[in-house]
Image 1 (cartoon, rainbow, N blue to C red):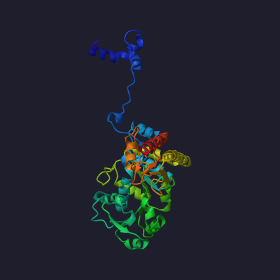
Image 2 (cartoon, one colour):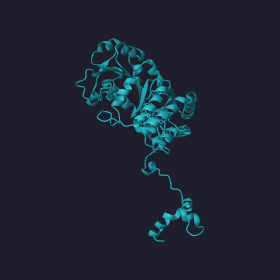
Image 3 (cartoon, one colour):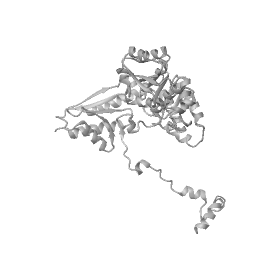
Image 4 (cartoon, helix red, strand yellow):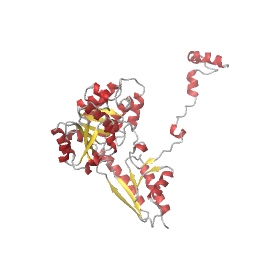
Length: 407
């Protein structure tokens, strides 16, 4: 059959195929007989290295893996058009209710939440001011107060809006620093134990002077209660990453807090233009995926999850300590990444390898395993492991330590 004739035939095949019992099969029969197309594996196609994540939710390692419910939500919502502001409205209401906040919005990561939240404080609902950021030359309020121990790289998210950080250490210095230029007081939660002013006092001083307070708690769940703890303490804005322990889209985050400040923040966010946040787009799939992720995270059995982590830790530590000269220490960071962390160290007269060498051998093995390293040992976390991967980590770690051990 010529190609031209075949095309003509196919155009009537649905009818002809049903009527003809012999000869060339109809479309339905042909489709049924055709082999299914192989699913495309782009990671393999590009030659990318995949690995077991025994390190943690680091951005460079693509943070966490989304649950099936989140992926299904993303895939299904990708098939439909909806108005992005309506998605933000509905999802914001749901997240705010779950986290005991007045209002909420999904942002392009925690950094975006910091920028947009600060922008909202500076402009409120004045669209002319929105268009001016980061030029604050005509603004009265241009300063954000921050504790010295909190004044680290993440403050650059705030300076994107044009503000000037004002560094203080004590409550007395804070009181003196507040003036007519003070727009906001910013608290970095991971540095909380290092600062001289704690959460409640920070918020109380802010309220005393009618200065909005913002907290950056990017990686600070678990515990799950932190999702509403800082709203209840009284912070006016709370910023959190979505793609870490909550296992939402990596590029998503949440800004929640006072209703008027969230509304103001949205003026500097997409889909609006002519503002500093236009490039911080978060698509409908990410917004809806983040909603499902946080809902699942809040409602899961956290005690059961912690017991699972402890079992994984026990397996890995027991395997490592079977090698002479190896010791382990388990600790839980007090704030950020509040999950069990194993530090594996060894007597290098008995195990002839540096921590970096063992770390590299785990990376180069099959399967590849990522850990974090230090001068005195390697650090392993278990909360990003898939079921069963703790056995692989335990076996491979013991193997590499055994190979390096002096016989």
